[in-house]
Amino acid sequence: MTGAGADGFSPEEIETGRRLFAQNCTFMLGVVQMDGLPDEGPAEVAFAGRSNVGKSTLLNALTNQKGLARASNTPGRTQEINYFDLAGAMRLVDLPGYGYARASRKDAEAWTRLTRDFLRGRSTLQRVCLLVDSRHGLKPADIDVMDLLDEVAVIYQIVLTKADKIKPTALEALRTETDQRIRRRPAAFPIVRPTSSETGFGIDLLRAELAGFAGE
View 1 (tube, rainbow, N blue to C red):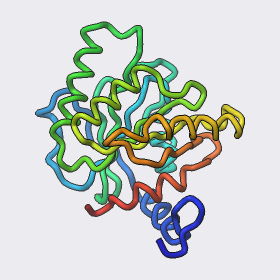
View 2 (cartoon, one colour):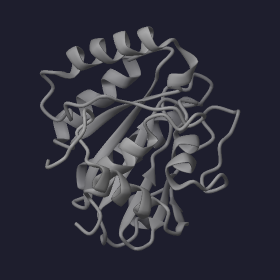
View 3 (tube, helix red, strand yellow):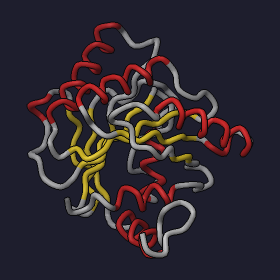
């Protein structure tokens, strides 16, 4: 990339990402069954992660809309696939949280089945941002999802959330460790992206990364 900085993005690309995500983003619909999915249209970027990892908060930070996605102190609240339209250029997809121990087995199986079917059959899905809490790193439930994404050949990128909650040295060590653990995974995007929805750290870089899918 011409003029790209240390993080791989030029000032122009950073600005393109900012301008895209500054446009109007609205809730489209919530889906509980595959036949409820909207017709395929603009490129889709999905956000997956353990319950309470900060998916809703990250979506709000990316779009700079505090009330776009409902953040809850109760893990497991998101029980459906939520679609958001970003100015007709892209769709952001909030997948059900996983790994919440208090969810009933029936509910957990239904959410898992819906998510699996979605990942296997959505041709407009360009990437899954797999959110991982910086304080905890990869957990067995995350590895299970990575195995599924590798199996169905959907490109996914590890996004570390809540980076402000740990020391910079610990964050860098976690990024290095995570990079090593995904290196040989066939569908893993090779850049681990640390972020903080609270301070805005890394949000501009993630916007620039995802802006490349707009219009595809």
